[in-house]
Image: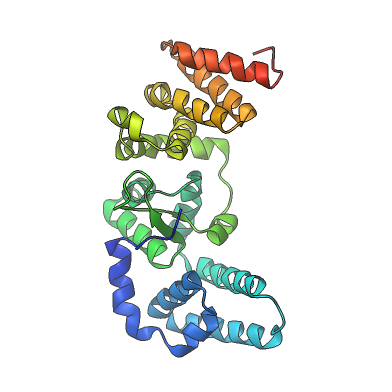
Length: 273
């Protein structure tokens, strides 16, 4: 995914902060657009903390002139991300961790639905989600299903530092959002147009949520896509998990899914399943 114009709720904040982007912030960012945006938004909301971290970044740059550009950029981004996380409220930290449920960027509206459910309030959820977007802890991309719309997800540094969801937490969160995500990525009628990564993500979330309806509609395509990419072990795993969900509720198992499960288990030498 390529970086994409941020949604309106994020863009409004950036427009209002434009005059605050000083030459010092530009210099500290060293040409890294994400770092520059994060500094911009931090300066708008936490001017004192921003100046302090900017000075620390400047000191690092002066003492590490010989480091390659990628090493410097990663270090600075890591430093700034840690500082931003320390400034978040408990709700904001919790929502950031919750959003690591998603393995690929998802529509911003789905993330905002998660925010509202997580915060138990539409108003608080909207405020909390907008904060994560504004601080670039949720990074915006083009939505693979709708190129004119924005998707988002935790940036790489934030994801690494947000904490790890356990299986139970992931299951609860998946139940919150999988139906909304399925609808936004085309629903039952959008099967032919849905991109592979969306099928795979929906299958994973539907299995976590034990949503037999969505499993029935996406698992076969996810398994087929994995098989086409020679990811036989993963294909077998998804097929077996999907069949277990359907079997547990007495739902009809699509014959093609059963066939694919058998083929993939044979391919990886799993003759028991």
